[in-house]
Every structure is written in structure tokens, then in C-alpha cells.
Length: 331
Image (cartoon, rainbow, N blue to C red; front, side):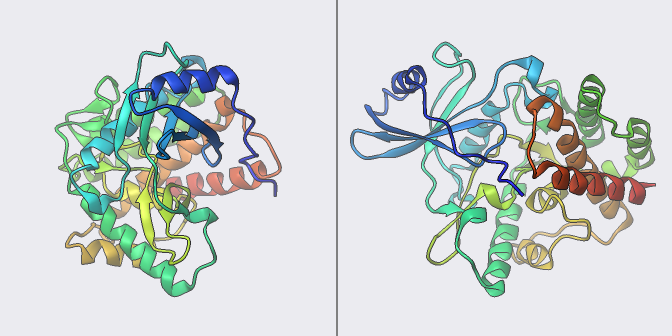
């Protein structure tokens, strides 16, 4: 299988110059490196004259190539980093500056502190015991994140229309947006079955009473670890965050998992003094709905992103299996 993240191309001179002007309040730009790993935004590691390293992230701005929920998406990253700043146990970088003018670069730019460690999916081999401990730490971190509550449900960027006074209302709008994208890009996602599942399980959705902060993308590529000890050191890329059902973070941590969440993850969550309603009819329905939403997004984004490569058939097979499994359980 080919790597879906090929080596980055050299940074064009005009981009380097634009980033130098953007980070000028922090210092003179002396080094730049484009980072790999993401499949939506473009991320650069910048070195300033005093040796400080920062990370600048910019996202596409062409609405014609974006899913509805992705418009102004990068701004959510800055919002979440600022929400997390008073809570060091959440292990998130600090926002250093933002540029939403779209005058220097075509898209919004967020500059944040450099995360310590290496991405968990690129880190050294670790023992089963260490992996279990890392999952427990992640579960504890999730519980801390979910203790932060908003005043509305839906995506965190205030300008989005994909919000609501209740979780059923917001979740319905979030799903409708993806179904609209599926129609636009001619992707078969069994839309009528999806809509029927939302109606059938409206009571389960209504049991989400508090708009908890959900990262939504806690897979290993967005977790940084110490290269020597393997311990969790940072959490990045909360650009898809929303206020809603905490169960979604269990899916985001292991998006292709068809069975129940990892026991260690749940144990860490409980050790932090919180709990989740898995094992109940409403809780299990909510978990399946979260898996369904994840599958819908991953199925539909393939077309506008133009994914290609030897890795794609296996990816689509896994996403389709998640989609089918979630729908079958909801029916």
C-alpha cells in the first residue's frame, strides 16, 4: 500500500514571503518546512531568528472544493486552543496569532506553539502495556475536554449555520450538510436510510443534554508522544471540533473500529471521574449515530479532495464497512 501522505513539495518563495510577513510580530523567519500527515490543511514548521519553532496552518478557502462544514474550518482550531489554554492537562498548543484577512495567503492562517514529541502514528514501537497506558491517558484527557460546555450545540465556529439549541437539532443539520454534499458530489450514502435512522433515534439524541466540547479527530496522527518514553505529550488539530455528544470522540480516536470502544480508553475516562452511557439502549444508539456520521464524512470527502493511490481501495472498504455496520445496528 502506498503512503497517502507523499513527501511535501518545496515551499514556494511567495508562500515563504507571505508567512514571514504574518509571523513578523513574533520574530524574523529564518527557516521553513512543510509538514506531512494532514489531508485537508497545509502545515508549516517555522523557525524564528531566536531559535523558537512555531507551527503555521492554513486551509483551503475555495468553497467549491469544500464540504459545507469545512468552510472557515481552521478558525475552530484557534477557538479550541484558546478554550484549552487554562487547562494544561488537555495538552494542546497555544495560539500565538491568527490571520483571517486572506490577503497574504488565500486561506485563514493560525500560528500556534510547537508541539513537543512526534506523532503517535510515526513514533517508535511500544509495548502493549504502554499502549494501554496511553489509551487510559487519552480517556482521561477526553473526560477533561468534555467537562467544557458551550451555550449552543454544533460546530464551534460562531458563524456557521450548523448549530442548534438542542443536540437533535444541531446533529440533524450537521448530517443534512453531509448528505447535501453527497448529493452534490454524486456519492451514494443511502441518504434515505440515514434520515430514517435520525428520526428513529431522536429520543436517544435528546439524551445529550449538555453541549460538551468534542475534539472529533483524536486518531494517533493527531496525538504527539515522547520519542523515548512513548508517553502522550500533545494533542493537535481540533479543527473539526463541535459542541455535542462526547461519544463521538471515542469514534474519532479509532474511526475504523466496528466493535465497542477500547476498554482502556473507557477505563481512563472513568478514572477521571466521568462516565459514558454505553451499554444502554440510548447510549448504544448514540454511539452508532456517531459512527455513521464519521463514515459519511469519510465517504463524501474522497471526491472533492481527489484522493488517489494504492491505499484508497482499502480505505474505502473500511469506511464502507463502518457505514454499513452503523446503519444496520440503527435499523
